[in-house]
Amino acid sequence: MDWDLNNTLGFTSNFTTPANTFDTAPSASHDLAPLFTGFSQDVHSLPLVTVPAGLQFPLSQPSDQGGRIEVGVDSSIHAPTEYVWNLTYERQMRLGTTLSVSYVGRMGRSLLARRDVAAFNDIRDPKSGMDWYTAGTMLEKQRQKGVDTSQIASIPFFDNLFPVGQLATLLNNDIGLPDAAGNMFNPTWTNTQAFYALQSRTPAPSGSDPSQFAGNDWTDAQFAVDSALFDAGNPTRFTQPQYGALSAWSTVGNSNYNGLTVSVRQRLSSLTMDFNYTFSHSLDDASGLQSETQSAYGNNNGNGAFIVNPLCQRCNYASSDFDIRHLINADAVWQLPFGKGRTFMSSASRLADAVFGGWQLSSIYRWNTGLPMPVSPFDDARWATNWNVQAAVTPAAPFHTCPNRSSDGVPKLFGGSGCDIKAIYQSFRNAYPGETGPRNYIRLPGYLNVDIGLAKTWTMPWSEKHQLQLRWDVFNVANLQRFGLVDNSRTGIGVSRDPALRGLNPPDNWSNFTQIQGQPRVMQVGARYSF
Image 1 (cartoon, one colour):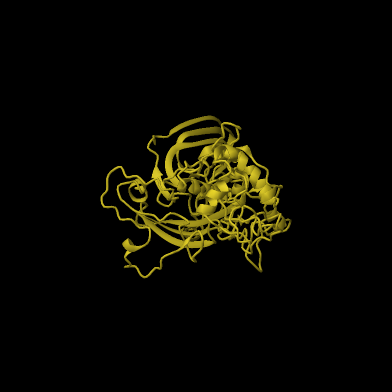
Image 2: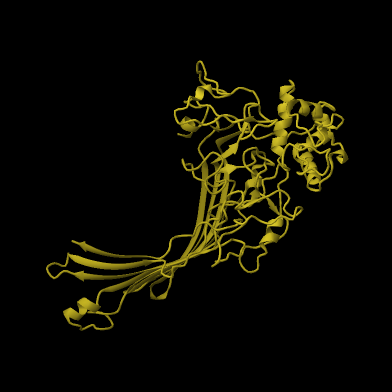
């Protein structure tokens, strides 16, 4: 279905206007977007829409530096491989008690995961030996300090891989963005300075620092440079001219699971109990289901099955989205000791036995440590590594969560006692080129739940095969409501540019909880007649 309905190279033909083509207001770099006039609007006449005269298979997109963001399927996809092993020790103890201790291991290889198969290239300069990630990081560190473009020293990477001394002129011809003095990119700038000027701080520290992007948006800088090269008839360096991003299912994922389980079971004539404890750790490159709810570049809560940087897949390896480190569950069923044949009221009359005998109490208890927060704090409006998905920011100082249950506002993950939310917000560093940031390192609150059921069974006087049971079940008896998902919007958990250097305060909704785990207390009463 993914290939047929979503892939532009599948069995259906569709057209997607490349990203950053239009704007809501005319500018030097973007045209005004066409107006929406109604659902019956003729789309064939809209700008840049080309109706193909004929179709041939396989379809292909033109190499026009269009920056398309699309979906595909890897042609080398194959069946995943799973290895499972376990070891169990079990012993029968006194009074019907059984102890079981197990180790469980599982390893997955060639698992289905999405990756951007058209991700921008980490090109290496064969002369200097430097790659783009290293050269880009050098520029980003200077940008964070507000170094003026005129003070940027030349980096051989840019001089060796681009037309010598021509990058500023090519950008002038392609972008033509004036600075405060009405100039374009200074033609005397070195290639390094011209590349840097695309990302100089906003507002610029001086009139000689024009900036096309709002800092740390290095993939847009890469795309702008390659577009200037492409339009001038030169080969591109970073981008694949057909796509800006192409998310494809591939069998490249890896996972590892190790768990220790301890189970104690008690079986008595009127009491049955089970206690289970699991200590485990699950790690993978990406977590997600191969379902229609999983979008091409992640799911509704996070990146899901998408690997942000396929050139450094190992950078995405971390605790799984569903990793629970400690888990305890217990259940019990107790036949209350009242009525005929029981400890109390063993000689009760039929009426007394019908009222007090035959009652059963049952309960289920669960406790576990918190799941990883599916969306790690990320660059809110910059794309340092992937052109379509922001990288996570990196904490520059240790911090801890302190969820609050505010009575006069919205509860926050970092809003309780012991948390300086402003200091936490400013402790994050934006991603360097090539970085994807740490994944699944922040934990949500743990989960706790107790359910109780009370039941009474009567055997019908006309037949022992006919029984009537009444039940009263209470789920989440304590009405405990631990918080779950956090606002995953750009203001909800995104981090703005240079938060510490600019002394920024977190947005009002930063780290706000939006959902509880489980459900509030629910009670139900039921009757069952069996025969």
